Length: 112
Image (cartoon, rainbow, N blue to C red; front, side, top):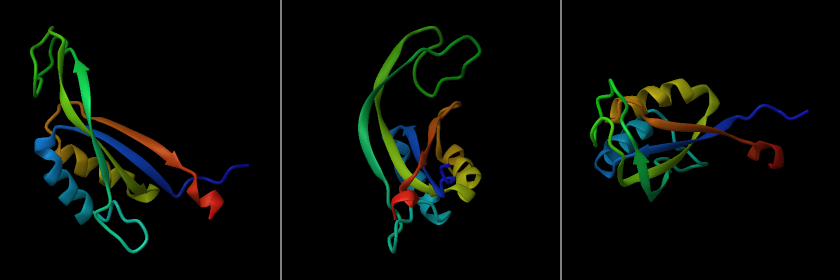
């Protein structure tokens, strides 16, 4: 039997223009703490593709047209008990009407 994870990795896709607000919010919420360090996150530029469908209100692009652009994939460690708080912080800082947020369980505690 595998023990439940104590932490998850949040993967957040966001425009570079909104990174500072995201990082400040996560840090203020106690998310991104690793040992005796806070404000810990990683990011990499990625090329994204999307097509807004009817009824969408896109931050970038036009309804019905395939768009592409550079955005950041931000990764941050989050305690399981703070996931809901983290999602609220992310959605407050995020300009997309449907932010892409992946929640990946971490199993590090099994090997400590």
